[in-house]
Image 1 (tube, rainbow, N blue to C red):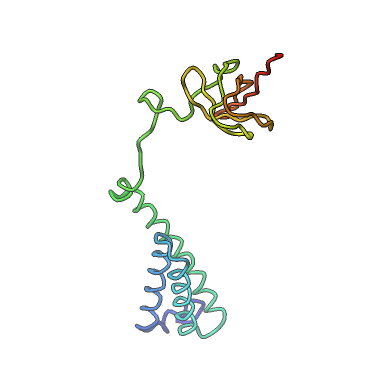
Image 2 (tube, helix red, strand yellow):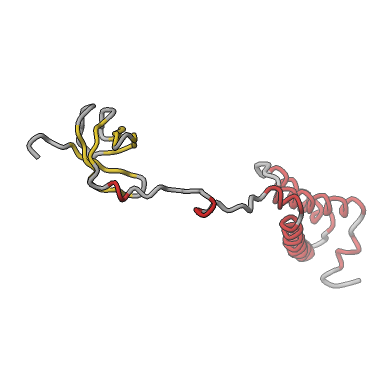
Length: 170
């Protein structure tokens, strides 16, 4: 069979085994993190099979492109099978954590602005302060506040509660 696909006649059992094992190693590398060991072995086996089979550079290039296309198709098929299987349903958590079910990601503390309390630890600039019997993590704008000093919540940025010391002359 002359032509660009003449390398098909040259494929022996050894080359076929090398091609199959190389493809299997590439698929294994896609699913099992092995720091590239299976991927490198797969590529080396495929290149060895191409080297043993192809008689010219063009035949080798055509074989490489065909193997690349086959590897992409096999990878797509393997990924689709893996995502639809029962194993993936056990590995992937499909539960949602909603507020309706009682889960809160971040508590809204914006109502605490203006609240007065007392520092429980030294604020340099982060520490703890007590407000209405509740101890919260707070920060200052950089100033140092001693323990047991009166503080007031200036503003809230997400979970960051910014306080300042209440001076006697304020």
